[in-house]
Image (cartoon, rainbow, N blue to C red; front, side, top):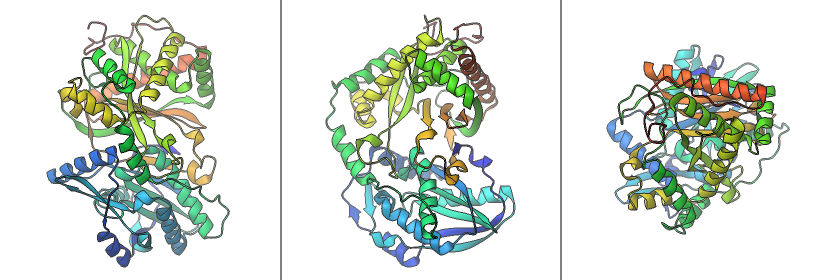
Length: 485
C-alpha cells in the first residue's frame, strides 16, 4: 500500500458498479433509535465542523479512501455478501449522527441493515471524468449524518476489477484504511470459495468511545501528562507549531490543498538509516523526527524542534483490526541547536518522542480543556498545528498479499495553512506525502524543505551520521524557538 494523492489514482476503464443498501435497509437505518454511547472526542469535533461547513455551503472533503486491483471477473452477489459481513464485524459502521443544540447524537442501526445490492452506474472511459465521478460520490455519500457513512464501488472489466472504498473521517483513520482493503478482499475471496485468512475478531469503536470519555475524566490539571503539555507549550509562547518556512499566507489565512509526494530512501538506504538510528540509541521513528528537526534548524534556524504527532490508541483494547478513529495527538519537542551531529540529536529526539507516547495516554481533549482553563493556549485552540506522522506499513496484517501490495490510500483535499507531512516506510522505500497550500511561495518553500530533508536522510544512510551546519540558513528566522528569539 502507498499513500498518494487522489488525483494519482486512475484505474483502467471499465463498467462502474456501486453498492448501496437495499431500500428496506435504508428505511430501517433512517429510523434507527438514539444510542446512549457518546461519540468519541474526535468524532464530536469532526461532526460539528462538518455541520458548520455544510451551513457555509462548502464541499465535503473530510473523507479518506482506498483502492486496489483484484484478479478475476467480479461476482456482484459475493461482493454484496462480503460487504454485509464487513459491516456486521464493525459496530461503529452501523452508526449515523446528527448535530443538535445540546451536542452530537449517535444513532445505532440494527444488524439487519447490512443488506446491500449492486447498481450499474455506466461506463468509465476517461480519467478526468472518473475523478469527477468518484469525488462526487465521496463528497455526497461518505458523510456521517446519513447511513451508511461509507461508499464502495468497482470498476469492472473482463478478467479483473478495481475495488474502492471511502468513508467519512468520523468512521476511519489511516490505520483503518490500511486494514479495510485487505479485509474486504479476504471476505470477498471467502465468498467466492477462494483461500483467504478469516479476519480476526475486532473490538467496537463504541466501546472505545465510552472508554475514552471515562479515561479523560481521570486526568486533572496537575496530572503529569497535562503538566508535560503545559511545559512544552509554555516554552513556545503558547503557540501551535507551524511550518518553519514562508508559505505565502497571511496569519490565519488558508489555501486549497496541494498534495506533494517525494521518494526519500530506497530499501537499502532505509536499512542503513535504521542502523544509524540504532547506533545512536534511537528507534527509526525518533530518527525521522531528528532529521526533520535538523532540517528546521538548518533552513530556518529553529533551535528546538516542536511539532505535533499522531499516535495510535488501539492498544487501549481489542482494537488491532477494528474500523474507527483510534488516534491521539501529542507534542514532540527536543533541542537541536548546540549539537554537532545527527547521532546527538537522535538521542534527544528519542527522549522527546518517548515522552510524547507517554503523555498521549491522556486524551487530547482533556489536555486542551485544562490548557484553555489556565490560559496556556487561549486563541491557539482554534489553530490547526503543523503535524508530522510516521507509519511503518510493514507491520499491517495484509502485507505481502496482492490486495495490500496493489493498494492506494488517499484523502479528501480541503484547505490548509500548514505543510504537514506523513512519512511512511514499507518494504520498498521511505517516502513522504504532504498537504501543502497551493501557492507559488509554498511550492518553492516546500520543494526546498523536502529536498534538504532528503539530503539529510541520504547523508545519514550513506555515512552513518550527519554534521549540522547553518550554511543553508538564507532567510530571516521568525517565530518562537528560533535563534534570534
